Amino acid sequence: MARLDINRSGEMEVFVRAIELGGFSAAARACGMTPSAVSKLVARLEHRLGTRLVNRSTRQLQLTPEGCVFYERSVRILADLNEAERCASTDATPRGKLRVNANVPFGHRFLLPLVPAFVARYPDVTLDIVLTDEVVDILEERTDVAVRAGPMKNSNLLARKLGATRMVIVGAPIYLERCGTPATPDDLLTHNRLGANYARVQSGWPLEHRGVKSVVPVSGNVQVSDGEALHRLAVAGLGLARLAAFQVRDDIAAGRLVPVMEECNPGDLEEIHAVYVGQGGHVPLRVRALLDFLVEAVKIR
Image (cartoon, rainbow, N blue to C red; front, side):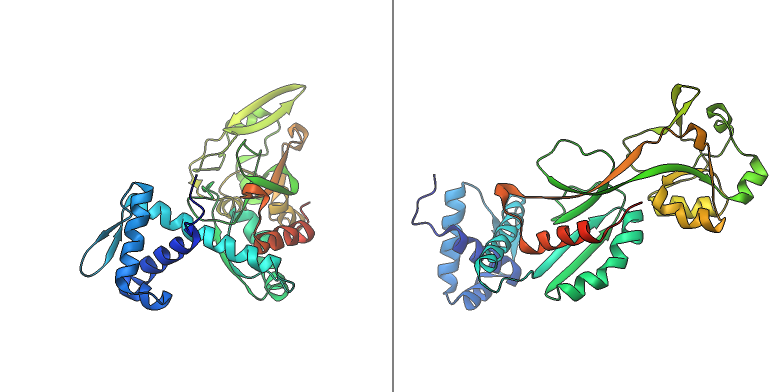
């Protein structure tokens, strides 16, 4: 157990300042210390941890792999400490940088349109938004909130459910005129079935025909990296695609896409969650504000 007379948060702050400012002298000026005191503090820190955190040279400090991990965790811990102090104050308001990761279809249909309202409500929060259909490691990418579609895997992450959507196979009228409209799972085998080149929970399209369940593998002449690109290719008439209902509802209403195989649709729903880290029950105020906002504002049909 750490000794009570060790100010670990103070050590972290000096260490982070030294790295961010590029040297002991700059950190000393920022912290009101002498360069030798900063150097000794970092040396004591390395001795206690039993590992070298930085390689020193006359011009710069270079983090070791262990130093990179300690620096990244220190930045997060210090931010959480500042957030805890703000939360305890009587005039606590969400503030600070909020890094958000969302899959591309959800990002375009829901998240981005809601940004103006969120920023207007919380002007002291700075959003850093990344849209990708790849599943990211929240801790490694230093992400505060990630929106994920599909079944939740067992993990140490917490989650708030934002809704669920039907999945539907669609094709453009121009494609169906050229290649015909499939009526059975076997019919699909002769069609261009557009897919994605990122890891998915399901390897194919689940169907149910006359009480028999099956999964038709995805096999087309194009694979893409996100669901929005898949949607655009389907509208362009390149082939069939299986997409979330919220993605294609407007296209179906406008006649740009036509649902097919609905009598074989098993009716499975794809759930959408906002996942986040909440170790020890502590959730930064800015994170809680976004989660509550999304639950309130997102209406998935």
